[in-house]
Amino acid sequence: MIRILNKNVADKIAAGEVVERPLSIVKELVENSIDAKSSKIVLEIKDGGKSYIRVTDDGIGISQDECELAFERHATSKIENENDLNSIETLGFRGEALASIAAVSRIELLTKTLKNNIGKKVTIHGGALVESSIYGCPNGTTIVVHDLFYNTPARLKFLKSSKSESSLIIDFITQVALAYPDIKVMLINNGTILFSTNGKGNRLNTIATLTSKIHSDKLIPFEYTEECVTVEGYVSGIGESRKSRKNQIFFINGRVINSKIIEKGISKAYSERLFDGRFPICYLFLTIDPKNLDVNIHPNKREVRFFNEELITSVVKNGILSALNSEDAIPDIKKNEKTFTFREPSHIEKKADQKCDENNVDIKNILSTYNTKVQETQMIITNEKNTIYEDKTVSSFNFEELSIVGQFFNTYVQLKSEDAIYFIDQHAAHERVFYEKILKQYREEEKIKQQLMIPIIFEISHGEKELEEQWLDPLCNMGFSLEEFGQLTYRVIEIPIFFKLSEAEEFLKGYIDNIGDYKNFIHEKAINNIAMKACKSAVKANDRLSKEEIKELLKDMKNCINPFSCPHGRPTFVKITKSDMEKNFKRK
Ligand code: ADP
Ligand code: MG
Image (cartoon, rainbow, N blue to C red):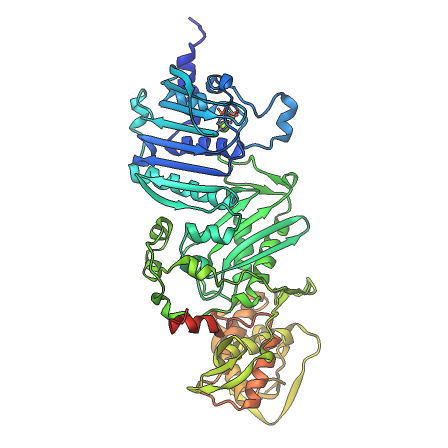
């Protein structure tokens, strides 16, 4: 017999689709609060949301005569007709959430609009109205959900432990707080306030509240636009990285998404700057015209399709490079951070990276000295055909403006400016300089060489001779001229202008030693890698530098595209500011 299901059963079935777990409820309620133009949202949960979820906001509220209607299925104030479907500006519009939640829990609504003098309270248990009365409360809405799935015990069994459920909720509300820095978001878990953002719109502040000082203090802010795509970002410099991508989070038009295309842009920006297997911390907020985006390829909308994927990769990469090439990217020495006020580590850092906890310091202290100004970086568009060296930005940091203090341990060069002291690791710096010069020479038509009075002679093995076709041309392209001098011997008569004889010899040794590792020298990556290894060999350890040589090095670093790290990702220099010193000596 065919019959129409009664409302109660139909609501329970519909609820199954909307309410899967406590997180689904939190999500719907918080999104309603955002749609209600709230400037403050408090979320309180107990037992992972299984026994208690409360969302309180200071939004527009629901007028007295509509409170019961709001719990009807397909009841919404957000759209009116079919046409509205094409221009939805709210997070919700289906009008199903409140009805579904009410069907599988005991729910209480307290609400008051600005227009109404007094508010209203509505209580519903398992979809049935229990109480509806006038009630005194502030403007805004509070919804309390007790005893989720009390009337569908089978579904209760599918929930995970309270800790697992609460961790999903904490992640979600953290993302909301990040996406909406203008909203003050507070989270209370089992009676303890986990965080409360200030809602003043400053993203770095919000990140600081949600993570830890170690995290946020190390982040370099930037904003970058290319062809109508804007990315606001906070990324870690080369001194700070993680073993996984866990600390990378991307928002598109306010929604968290996963994206391989964005990850690709990040990897390109950090290539050479970080060791393989290390990942930077990245908070990226992209704004894109929704027309250039398909958000409906995945049911939970975590995946999106970009119509121009290359543009997205490029915006992310160039935006991050502008940050990494700014002065903010220079790693600070802050050894004595422990002398600051300690505070309890936040929930996220406890979860995300246990080993950072030990270094937590007072975030406000640090933020007051945080320089959020991103240096303007000069964008240079290189010939697209030249893929051998992909970075398009040039560092804006002028090394030549620093005064030289001296060199010590035959390894470090000390410099100073008005408000900071710098230490350069001369070996890492030389490696970087050689590497960039070699690759530049490689891709330029004209090679600048110097002739040797006494040629360098070097020998190779039979195996290396077999591969001659592959490695000989790239070597000549880098600015070496050589002749065969016996079956397995070569004579080098010219070397690149910027090498000393001893450096060129070591470079050649390094180059030949690594030939066997690269089967395909036509590949740009192989050339990059072998040049990187050979440059490392060319740099001498414990080398005393004259003042002239230091000046030369500074000039070379100034001309580098990425002077901040050696090709292997080690920093080339660090900075101690006057303010760091004052803190270390407890003057501040
Ligand atoms: P939807 O959000 O899809 O419209 P819901 O079932 O989530 O459907 O909510 C139904 C209606 O109740 C909303 O359209 C809105 O008018 C009202 N509402 C729900 N939550 C709030 C809130 N926190 N503040 C103001 N109005 C709310
Ligand atoms: Mg809704």
